[in-house]
Length: 454
Image (tube, one colour):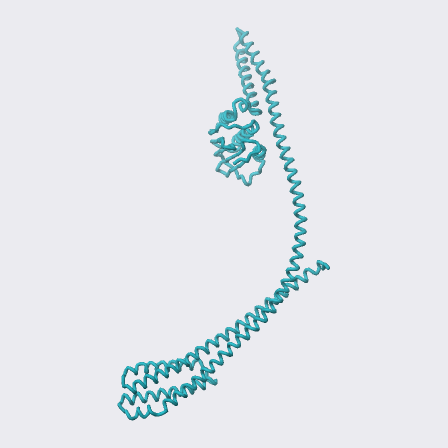
């Protein structure tokens, strides 16, 4: 049975609250266990140090007794060195033990009794050593032969054993506290882990439902996106085909217009020029004014013929069909330099291309030079044409004012038409420009139709 969507938020909130509570309980258990374990470990360390201190005290008392007995039996002063060192250490250890046992406790009373027994033992050993130094043989031998020293040592061992036993009991109690803390932490962590697993299960269940719903929405969006992208691709392909068709029609109209100008207008201008020449030859004695007028008419007709030729070349360059691409580009560069006064340097390699790609390159260079003359304010233009194994590269570079290629609109300066013409021929156009750094237009076209430029 599928739950209504209105239950999704309460179930998610319940799982989140349960997870937060589990995390809070886990943190509390962890902190409590840490505090108790730290305290128990600290007490274990104290008891260990206390037990070691009592053992060292007992060892130093034994060392002092051994040294004193050695001196009493042999009279060798060298035995006094370990004796004196042990006595000094005994005093230090007693001071440390007093700091470890606060007054008022049972252990403090046992330490006080131990201190008194140690002091009695030290007094007994000191008296025996002094009598031996003074040469009182009977006195120190009498003390040595009695059971006073043994009684003192037995009392010291008994009190030391009680203190060690008390420290051991404290260590065991602290260890039991650590074990208890670990057991409680283990149980608590188990319970919290179970609660966390339950919360995770609720979260996972809710996430799975949300993910499924999201996937369904994404699938619907992707379907809509694919449909829109398909429509955009179809429209783009149609527009590209239309633009290519318009360019072809334009070139055809240009060719037709060039032929009409060449055939009709050219014939008219040529006939008019011949008529003027015929009139000049028949007018032997002509007034000066008529001669000047005829000469001006001849020059006007020559200018018209030159203008006609230039217009025809712009519409459909005859040099491209008659002389080839390299020669046509050289002529184009020379005429542009003569008209604009801008120096043009060319580096052109012979290339073998079909008529369509030759016209594409020619129009690219022609449009680039037109833009340079109108907008660039350049002093020099470099044109290069290089042929490679499977592609050719055209580069037009000027030193003009340049522009921001990123912010400039694609249609500015005819870049959109240039780019489409190059891409329609299977090539790639790159425009690089910065304000104050000139402009560089590079086109790469394959030599064969359908090939990809390197």
